[in-house]
Image 1 (tube, rainbow, N blue to C red):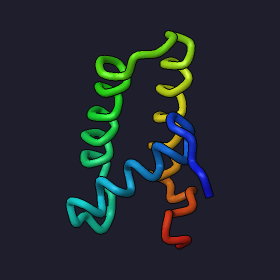
Image 2 (tube, helix red, strand yellow):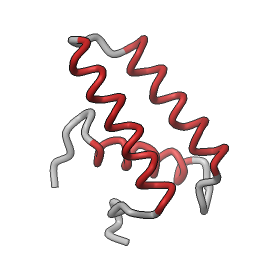
Image 3 (tube, rainbow, N blue to C red):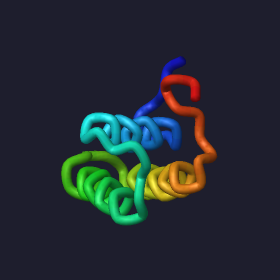
Image 4 (tube, rainbow, N blue to C red):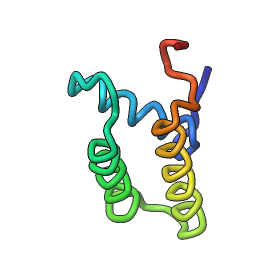
Length: 79
């Protein structure tokens, strides 16, 4: 399945990849906050786009973080 940059699914995968790369089994509130902060900084300062798109990406990041916190997302592994 293709996941588009900036979509909720994209950010869920980014968070999952970060957790996997850093060998973290479960995402604590603090870990999710750090990951979200890093992704938000990239969107605000590194990603060049229209402000409307940036706002939508930030909203999707917040939604994805909530999904990961509550476990309401489909992992890349299908779990």
